Length: 291
Image (cartoon, rainbow, N blue to C red; front, side, top):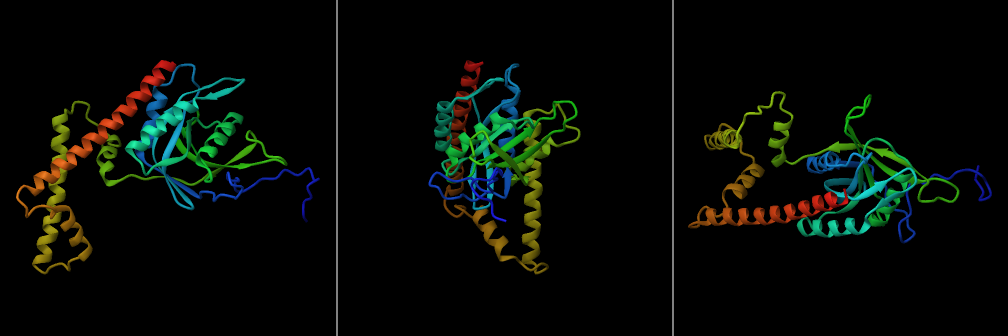
């Protein structure tokens, strides 16, 4: 039965309209990287005693149906029973700094700690929806597990306007699947954090020795595989051979080619870490000044 405009029924929209009036595609899933979670936890640990929760901006990439959250940065905000205020100028200044380090990442949504979703959450969601238009903004709620009776966890949401005449503060948060994803380069750090009996007496030299041992073991497995292929015991995989050639064969035949390539890589890594450190120092100084 059709519903006429004079009806008192509440309309729930599956997709929020974009800035050009066309409906945008709602993300159906979200993946988040450990670096983003660590940034959120670091922000939560540096909060003031008066802050019930902290919020920030999520950066990453998106497809038609999936959002990939790769990093995050804190945003200054104050929240009381009467009002909520977000420092938009600080948010945009930090985003400009982050784009210099990671130009392929854009704003995909925002995060908050805790599991409470209220009217203020809807207002913040509306602000970030304008930042991500014509795409929908996602919201990641990280429960730190510090409240009694609540366990730690991560949940992801998208919003849908509700009401006869939808307003920014009137929306429902619809949960979407959330998955943790990490690169191989991050595996060693995660393994150390998830170790059941981490040794607190390890020095930097011990950690370096352990990492070198792991690399030596992996190179041993690669060497054993190559020798098996050369002896005809195993059928060689062309994809694996091309990958090994790309990784290990670059610049080896040239005089000093390997050393020059290593120096270039170290220089790029140093400059990237330097810019990232400056952005983090700027964020922490701003939070300290606000506190």
